[in-house]
Image 1: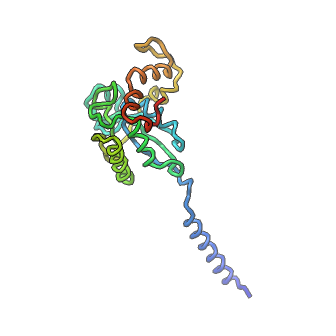
Image 2 (image 1 turned 90 degrees about the horizontal axis):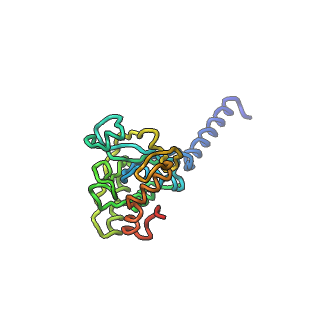
Image 3 (image 1 turned 180 degrees about the vertical axis):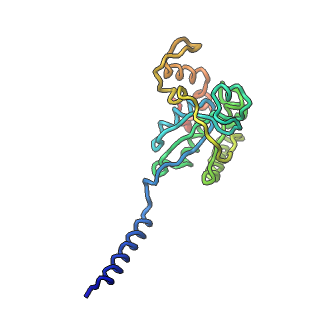
Length: 218
């Protein structure tokens, strides 16, 4: 005969068993992770990584410096210590941090210590701002890139730091329809971006360096 006290004990045991079972099942909807990288012009890095399956979004901004809430003008003028950077939000159940890091190295010139492509200043240098859990995979990705290239990779793996989003007009610049005045004449932001990327020689240099392993070149 099941007494009220026995029923309570059986119910409690069942709830505990269910709880342990749920904990044992891996959750593929555990949320998102972020990876922050600097790869020269943040418009280009943002546009590249937004194409990757599993990436939920990418934000252009600044990282690595000492100035709080810097403006684009302050960073590009020098003295802030910041890099142009992109914070990538991704679903680790779809794409891993090490895959993103491999793609990152193959989308830049990691042998250049003075900037990227036509952009020559400290703010355009490459870097990885790794969380504690990302440092080992970042160092592995760097070592692999160096081995594959047969050249010294100078991109530093730095610790996690404060990330400051850039001004609103920099976000999704490669998709923008607003008319801007450029040295190529009046163009939409999207067309200005395409003209800049081509004139800066980004894809040309990456293709020359990485060949068929370059992931984002046309």
